[in-house]
Amino acid sequence: MDIDISALFSQIDSDVWFSIGAIFFLLCLSAFFSGSETALTATSRARMHSLSRDKESSDSDRADLVTELLEKKDRLIGALLLGNNLVNILASALATSVLIKIFGETGVVYATLAMTMLVLIFAEVLPKTYALNNADKMALKISPIIRVLVAVLSPITEAIIKIVQFTMKLFGVDVTQVGIGNHYEILRGVIEMHQGENEETNEERAMLRSILDLPDVEVEDIMMHRRDVMMLDASMLSEDIISAVLDSPYTRLPLWQDNQENIVGVLHTKLLLKEWYKCGGDMSKVDIKNATLDPWFIPETTTLFDQLQEFRTRREHFALVVDEYGSFMGIVTLEDILEEIVGEIDDEYDVAVKGVRPQPDGSYMIDGKVTIRDLKREFEWDLPDDEYSTLAGLILYETQTIPSIGQKFQCYDFRFEIMRRQRNQLTLIRVTPPEEEEHEIVET
Image (tube, rainbow, N blue to C red; front, side, top):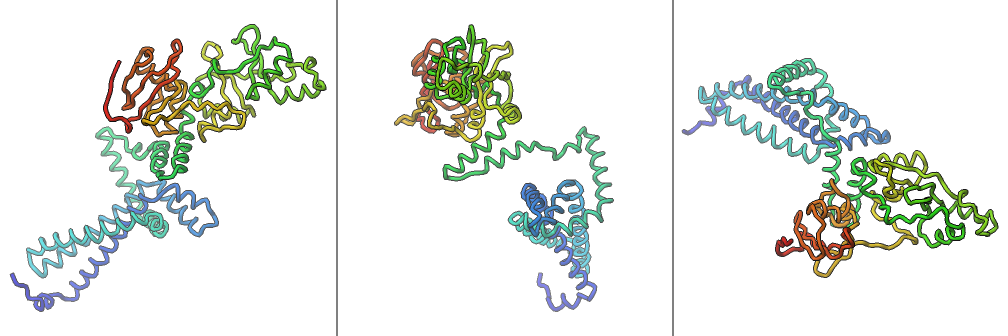
């Protein structure tokens, strides 16, 4: 059907031109509401919080407004959706009226098609795309206007929210819990998004993960086991104790009396040096008690976060770990906890025990007492550590037996081979990560 353009325009009077102008204005408002909704929901609350605290920034006040709006997100979304629906419906009604005047009843079809395309492209996709790419910048600019809009429409939005809550309760849904999330999960997600090719990025990600893990890890998972703790017999001669201290790489050594379960103190090398100097260098006159601190016992179930706070409060660096029966299990130091955050801290006196030796074929020879957490930090291996802390513990837990030398098995896509065993203790294990494996082998 041919349409006479000149005849068409002759039918358009001033009222119709006014309606077309109003439709254009309403579409602009719709674009503003759509873009505002996307910008305010996509903006970084953490960045806004940081900007609001930076009083020297020119955006500090507007960041406060954005934060205030996001605190009551239901009212914000309600006001924006109310405004958006009002202008869209009004624009569609005007368009239908105009096109009916021009084309008659078929104008309804033309109005539906035209408004759908106009609203979709210019009032939804375009403004939301821009807002997604400029969320923070746009949120800061529009916050004063949106604040006024929310205040003006608050009576209506509050009524809408009440109706929604009542309706949802009929279906057994508690709307007051909607939007309440776990901030730890959000933080963990952001940390995992911190990607990069350089080694520094991997180290930063590992440190941030470890900080969040502190409340979930217990001291028994990182302590030095009692079999590896260097202890001294308090009944030894002072000369022998001093000689043992000089040969030790440690600054604090537990002292036991009668049996190793009966720890009576912690020998501090600095105090011992002072006592030695006071005695004029005569070892036989040194009173070991003057260089001994009272032992501090903590339960093995204490979390690293709580223990770190206790270390700070007591200004201590050394604690003795006991189980629920009071038996001595091992020691934990402030350095041990810090190493859980920043990685291994070696000084010139540390005993160099690597525990992990890469092999030419891509596998690793690993000491059984190396912790899963250290392996996850170093190699980003996806191994669980909820029920155990060491590599040997993982194997014992998964096999429910004590494997023999040469035994191989596959678990979590890793291949494990027992290389050395001392009595019931797995001392050396070959581990082949999944990316290095060419064939899946399960052998018992």
